Image 1 (cartoon, rainbow, N blue to C red):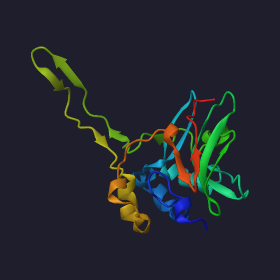
Image 2 (cartoon, one colour):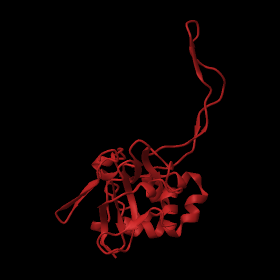
Image 3 (cartoon, rainbow, N blue to C red):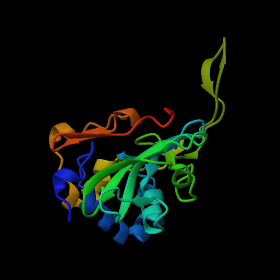
Image 4 (spheres, helix red, strand yellow):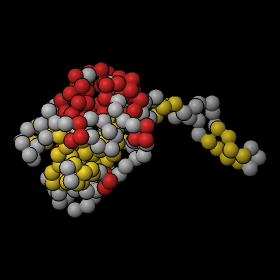
Length: 210
């Protein structure tokens, strides 16, 4: 089993420990939309010209379970669970980064078009912390006599999806190992994906870059 230091990214979640737990609870996660739609800074997929974003946890776990969101580890050839993937469907160039149970954090440059377009992953992404709309609010109108007013009484309702920190703290407290200063949920772009491990920097390019 890989060490903690070799399996953490920007969220400070130990993915070597987290992925088996999430797989065990796949049915629980995907039976509740508020859990299935949780987004993590570390989970991302996309393709140039087709878009992308933070992959919903439920989609990622289902992809891991069905092996559609996995790749062969470039170090030991074991099954690696993908966390981030991006590339160009035109040129076929791409990169991915993920977790090998034996090697920890690994990455490789290879085509990921089929992986990103798999039924479990394609389109099942959004921005970090996104809460899907359940009910649209009444539209706002404006006139010079009344000013801004709502044309109706419907209030906007969104699915109360917890942040990834709240999700971990509530459902997998053993994984809550971050320090107070690491709770920033800033939306990191794909270009910023990278970390230094034993002097080596692992990075992945923006999906649209060739």
